[in-house]
Image (cartoon, rainbow, N blue to C red):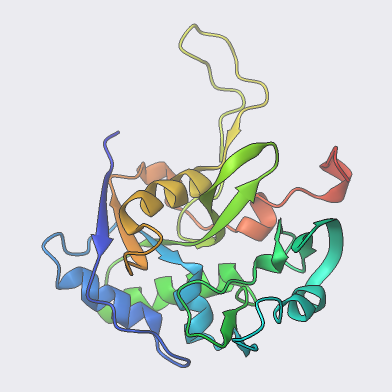
Length: 236
Protein backbone atom coordinates (compact mmCIF):
# COMPACT_ATOMS: atom_id res chain seq x y z
CA UNK A 1 0.00 0.00 0.00
CA UNK A 2 1.30 3.45 -0.96
CA UNK A 3 -0.18 6.54 0.64
CA UNK A 4 0.09 10.12 -0.58
CA UNK A 5 -0.74 12.99 1.77
CA UNK A 6 -1.66 16.42 0.44
CA UNK A 7 -2.14 19.64 2.42
CA UNK A 8 -5.42 21.29 1.43
CA UNK A 9 -5.12 25.04 0.96
CA UNK A 10 -7.74 27.59 0.02
CA UNK A 11 -9.97 27.13 3.05
CA UNK A 12 -11.15 30.50 4.41
CA UNK A 13 -11.08 31.58 8.04
CA UNK A 14 -13.85 29.59 9.69
CA UNK A 15 -16.57 31.22 11.76
CA UNK A 16 -19.65 29.88 13.51
CA UNK A 17 -22.30 28.47 11.21
CA UNK A 18 -20.08 27.76 8.22
CA UNK A 19 -20.78 24.45 6.45
CA UNK A 20 -17.43 22.65 6.44
CA UNK A 21 -18.30 19.88 3.98
CA UNK A 22 -18.84 22.09 0.92
CA UNK A 23 -15.90 24.34 1.85
CA UNK A 24 -13.50 21.41 2.18
CA UNK A 25 -14.88 19.66 -0.89
CA UNK A 26 -14.51 22.80 -3.00
CA UNK A 27 -10.94 23.35 -1.82
CA UNK A 28 -10.01 19.77 -2.68
CA UNK A 29 -11.80 19.79 -6.04
CA UNK A 30 -10.05 23.03 -7.03
CA UNK A 31 -6.60 21.65 -6.16
CA UNK A 32 -4.20 19.83 -8.45
CA UNK A 33 -4.97 16.50 -6.76
CA UNK A 34 -8.78 16.84 -6.78
CA UNK A 35 -11.18 14.70 -4.77
CA UNK A 36 -11.91 11.02 -5.42
CA UNK A 37 -13.85 8.11 -3.96
CA UNK A 38 -11.85 6.46 -1.19
CA UNK A 39 -9.94 9.57 -0.14
CA UNK A 40 -9.66 10.22 3.60
CA UNK A 41 -9.80 13.81 4.81
CA UNK A 42 -8.17 14.67 8.12
CA UNK A 43 -9.77 17.82 9.55
CA UNK A 44 -8.29 19.61 12.54
CA UNK A 45 -10.49 20.00 15.59
CA UNK A 46 -10.00 23.75 15.66
CA UNK A 47 -12.03 24.52 12.53
CA UNK A 48 -14.74 22.09 13.62
CA UNK A 49 -15.01 23.86 16.97
CA UNK A 50 -15.12 27.25 15.25
CA UNK A 51 -17.83 26.17 12.80
CA UNK A 52 -19.93 24.64 15.58
CA UNK A 53 -19.55 27.63 17.89
CA UNK A 54 -17.59 25.69 20.53
CA UNK A 55 -15.72 28.85 21.52
CA UNK A 56 -15.68 30.74 24.80
CA UNK A 57 -14.54 34.20 25.82
CA UNK A 58 -11.58 34.49 28.19
CA UNK A 59 -9.57 37.35 29.65
CA UNK A 60 -6.76 37.91 27.16
CA UNK A 61 -4.71 39.66 29.84
CA UNK A 62 -4.89 36.72 32.25
CA UNK A 63 -2.97 33.62 31.05
CA UNK A 64 -4.87 31.47 33.56
CA UNK A 65 -8.37 32.75 32.84
CA UNK A 66 -9.28 29.54 31.01
CA UNK A 67 -8.64 27.35 34.08
CA UNK A 68 -12.21 27.64 35.47
CA UNK A 69 -13.45 26.49 32.06
CA UNK A 70 -11.12 23.48 32.28
CA UNK A 71 -12.67 22.57 35.63
CA UNK A 72 -16.15 22.93 34.13
CA UNK A 73 -15.43 20.82 31.05
CA UNK A 74 -13.69 18.00 32.93
CA UNK A 75 -15.64 15.12 34.41
CA UNK A 76 -12.59 14.02 36.40
CA UNK A 77 -9.26 15.55 37.40
CA UNK A 78 -6.51 12.94 37.24
CA UNK A 79 -3.39 14.94 38.09
CA UNK A 80 -2.29 18.49 38.81
CA UNK A 81 1.19 19.93 38.54
CA UNK A 82 1.57 23.66 38.67
CA UNK A 83 -0.68 25.13 35.99
CA UNK A 84 -1.06 21.79 34.21
CA UNK A 85 -4.23 19.78 34.76
CA UNK A 86 -4.68 16.29 33.33
CA UNK A 87 -8.37 15.60 32.89
CA UNK A 88 -10.92 13.16 31.62
CA UNK A 89 -13.51 14.79 29.39
CA UNK A 90 -17.15 13.84 28.91
CA UNK A 91 -16.10 12.24 25.62
CA UNK A 92 -13.81 9.83 27.50
CA UNK A 93 -10.56 11.50 26.40
CA UNK A 94 -7.72 11.78 28.90
CA UNK A 95 -5.81 14.92 28.01
CA UNK A 96 -4.37 18.17 29.30
CA UNK A 97 -6.76 20.99 30.24
CA UNK A 98 -9.90 19.16 29.03
CA UNK A 99 -8.76 19.72 25.43
CA UNK A 100 -9.25 23.49 25.71
CA UNK A 101 -6.95 25.23 23.26
CA UNK A 102 -5.74 28.81 22.93
CA UNK A 103 -3.60 28.37 19.81
CA UNK A 104 -4.75 29.47 16.36
CA UNK A 105 -7.75 31.34 17.76
CA UNK A 106 -8.27 35.06 18.26
CA UNK A 107 -6.92 36.61 21.44
CA UNK A 108 -9.57 36.58 24.13
CA UNK A 109 -11.02 33.28 22.93
CA UNK A 110 -10.51 29.60 23.68
CA UNK A 111 -11.67 26.60 21.68
CA UNK A 112 -13.54 23.77 23.35
CA UNK A 113 -13.70 20.25 21.98
CA UNK A 114 -16.67 19.60 19.68
CA UNK A 115 -19.72 18.19 21.43
CA UNK A 116 -19.57 14.96 19.39
CA UNK A 117 -16.66 14.65 16.97
CA UNK A 118 -17.96 11.41 15.43
CA UNK A 119 -21.16 13.24 14.56
CA UNK A 120 -19.13 16.16 13.18
CA UNK A 121 -17.20 13.78 10.93
CA UNK A 122 -20.41 12.14 9.70
CA UNK A 123 -21.86 15.54 8.82
CA UNK A 124 -18.83 16.43 6.69
CA UNK A 125 -18.96 13.03 4.94
CA UNK A 126 -22.66 13.47 4.17
CA UNK A 127 -22.30 17.04 2.91
CA UNK A 128 -19.41 16.11 0.61
CA UNK A 129 -21.36 13.14 -0.73
CA UNK A 130 -24.41 15.35 -1.34
CA UNK A 131 -22.53 18.22 -2.98
CA UNK A 132 -19.81 16.40 -4.92
CA UNK A 133 -21.12 12.83 -5.34
CA UNK A 134 -17.91 11.49 -3.83
CA UNK A 135 -17.59 8.96 -1.00
CA UNK A 136 -14.80 9.88 1.42
CA UNK A 137 -13.75 9.10 4.96
CA UNK A 138 -13.25 11.88 7.49
CA UNK A 139 -11.12 11.98 10.63
CA UNK A 140 -11.31 14.84 13.14
CA UNK A 141 -7.85 15.26 14.66
CA UNK A 142 -6.46 16.98 17.72
CA UNK A 143 -3.05 17.26 19.36
CA UNK A 144 -2.49 15.22 22.52
CA UNK A 145 0.46 14.57 24.77
CA UNK A 146 1.23 11.02 25.86
CA UNK A 147 2.04 9.52 29.27
CA UNK A 148 5.67 8.46 29.65
CA UNK A 149 6.73 10.03 26.34
CA UNK A 150 7.82 13.55 25.46
CA UNK A 151 6.33 15.49 22.59
CA UNK A 152 2.83 15.78 21.22
CA UNK A 153 1.22 14.02 18.29
CA UNK A 154 -2.11 14.29 16.51
CA UNK A 155 -4.74 11.66 17.26
CA UNK A 156 -8.26 11.00 16.02
CA UNK A 157 -11.09 12.31 18.21
CA UNK A 158 -13.81 11.55 15.67
CA UNK A 159 -14.22 9.62 12.43
CA UNK A 160 -16.75 8.55 9.82
CA UNK A 161 -16.43 6.44 6.70
CA UNK A 162 -13.03 5.09 7.73
CA UNK A 163 -12.06 2.50 10.31
CA UNK A 164 -11.01 3.66 13.74
CA UNK A 165 -9.42 0.32 14.61
CA UNK A 166 -8.35 -2.53 12.33
CA UNK A 167 -8.52 -5.89 14.13
CA UNK A 168 -5.67 -8.20 13.09
CA UNK A 169 -6.41 -10.90 15.64
CA UNK A 170 -6.55 -14.29 13.97
CA UNK A 171 -4.33 -13.26 11.07
CA UNK A 172 -0.71 -14.39 10.72
CA UNK A 173 2.52 -12.42 11.00
CA UNK A 174 5.34 -12.67 8.45
CA UNK A 175 6.57 -15.91 10.08
CA UNK A 176 3.17 -17.58 10.07
CA UNK A 177 2.40 -17.07 13.76
CA UNK A 178 -1.17 -16.18 14.66
CA UNK A 179 -1.69 -12.68 16.04
CA UNK A 180 -3.60 -12.92 19.29
CA UNK A 181 -4.02 -9.34 20.55
CA UNK A 182 -3.08 -6.95 17.75
CA UNK A 183 -5.59 -4.20 17.04
CA UNK A 184 -4.23 -1.20 15.12
CA UNK A 185 -5.70 2.26 15.68
CA UNK A 186 -5.35 3.32 12.06
CA UNK A 187 -7.37 6.49 12.66
CA UNK A 188 -4.66 7.74 15.04
CA UNK A 189 -1.93 6.75 12.59
CA UNK A 190 -3.61 8.61 9.73
CA UNK A 191 -4.20 11.67 11.93
CA UNK A 192 -0.53 11.77 12.93
CA UNK A 193 0.60 11.33 9.32
CA UNK A 194 -1.65 14.17 8.17
CA UNK A 195 -0.16 16.52 10.76
CA UNK A 196 3.22 16.20 9.04
CA UNK A 197 1.88 18.22 6.10
CA UNK A 198 -0.46 20.49 8.06
CA UNK A 199 1.99 21.58 10.75
CA UNK A 200 1.17 23.62 13.83
CA UNK A 201 1.63 27.14 12.47
CA UNK A 202 1.12 26.90 8.71
CA UNK A 203 -2.62 27.58 8.76
CA UNK A 204 -3.46 24.35 6.90
CA UNK A 205 -6.48 22.78 8.67
CA UNK A 206 -7.15 19.85 6.34
CA UNK A 207 -5.08 17.12 4.71
CA UNK A 208 -6.17 14.62 2.07
CA UNK A 209 -4.82 11.07 2.25
CA UNK A 210 -5.05 8.93 -0.87
CA UNK A 211 -4.37 5.22 -1.20
CA UNK A 212 -5.94 3.99 2.05
CA UNK A 213 -6.77 0.26 2.04
CA UNK A 214 -10.32 -0.08 0.73
CA UNK A 215 -11.08 -2.54 3.55
CA UNK A 216 -10.64 0.33 6.00
CA UNK A 217 -13.41 2.34 4.37
CA UNK A 218 -16.38 1.55 6.58
CA UNK A 219 -18.55 3.14 9.22
CA UNK A 220 -16.77 3.54 12.50
CA UNK A 221 -16.62 5.57 15.72
CA UNK A 222 -13.84 6.78 17.98
CA UNK A 223 -16.18 6.73 20.97
CA UNK A 224 -17.25 3.11 20.38
CA UNK A 225 -14.00 1.59 19.12
CA UNK A 226 -11.07 3.54 20.57
CA UNK A 227 -12.03 4.82 24.02
CA UNK A 228 -11.13 2.11 26.53
CA UNK A 229 -13.77 1.44 29.15
CA UNK A 230 -12.76 1.77 32.82
CA UNK A 231 -13.29 -1.99 33.23
CA UNK A 232 -10.53 -2.64 30.66
CA UNK A 233 -8.21 0.11 31.84
CA UNK A 234 -5.29 -0.96 34.05
CA UNK A 235 -4.70 2.63 35.18
CA UNK A 236 -8.19 3.47 36.49
